[in-house]
Length: 275
Image (cartoon, rainbow, N blue to C red; front, side):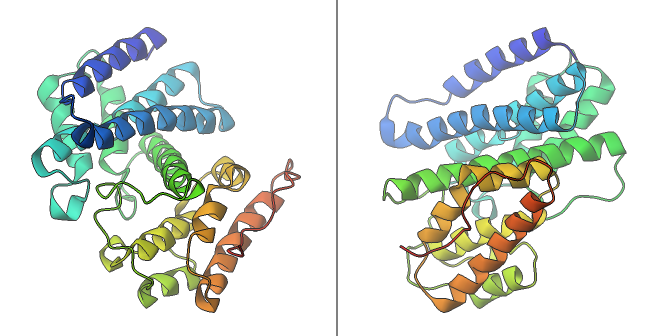
């Protein structure tokens, strides 16, 4: 795959996404956030790709995956006015439907198309399949890590400015002073929490913190700590001993990963929820 392919796909993406805009801010705002998110995920996946020495052709494949990973979000929002897959449709499946219906990848080789579609199909799955070729597995892992890095940024920016997230972005979860024990327990067990257990905005925040147990690349963990988004999300949680303990586990996971890197002297402080 070559850079001119990526340029053509970017132009197509811009035209496709603009076709969903209505000119009405309340409707368009969540879609604009998804367009901005896509651009940053493309940057993230390229940064991660460089950290594992992808070839120029592989970098083009990676950027295409970043560009199209959330393509189905636009049709999802037009149909259902939500980004909650459980209440509408799996947005990864919708993305693949759009790709197949439009033929946007038809100029690529069969191998390139297979890798791109596999990565998109599993970018939001609870886990990865064990029966895929190593080439597909590499790109599946890259997009999952790149996506998480930007989702953390999106939510941290809301809390940095003391604003509540867009209701559609947080799946219309209520902002309650509570949290689910099952989600806290998942963190205590060093595993990713489950979407189906969420009942409040605090659960959403804790689930996002638990994603550190589903990262694949050392560069992702290093960036997660360096950027400080997890610390911002943590500080937005209630000041409670149970949550302090959970956040301490997340912090230890990041510290351990960063210490294992040769360039670990980043001077970033430990995550805390103290005000």
